Length: 207
Image (cartoon, one colour):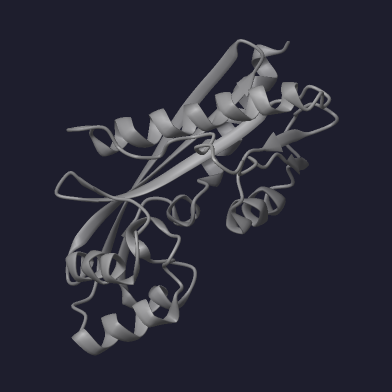
């Protein structure tokens, strides 16, 4: 068990995969979900900036999510505890492939990944009071050449609708993967080694 505060941490994410991965390594956590307020924008703007590099983008968004989660915790008068947030993106030739806007966008993304190697970057940020650190996991995934029928069927399944790069490696898209270099859990959305190292740094910082 990682040495973290007795109460555990807050996870500022709706991702069931991140919940499963934290549970896998024995981290006690409470969900800290952002509320969607009618007529107002989201707590975190995940749109990339012009000419923003993929690694800079994911680190910025992860830190912004952690900051927003900390503010939300205070606004709700919740017991103070560290806030963990993460962001994942896929990149091809330095171009960011975030979550698809619709099925047509998803199809275009999968077509770009077909028969090629792409990067998957996941940044994890941890905030506690004025202390915040961020770590980055960088992996390479190679897809086999996909037929038009394979792409059509996968996109129609809806599995990639809310996923960076329009696919989920832990789902049906696993059959497309020829090679993976890096962190499987990082491609899923929460690199466990890097996350564990971050939690250990927090423990040291609190000594």
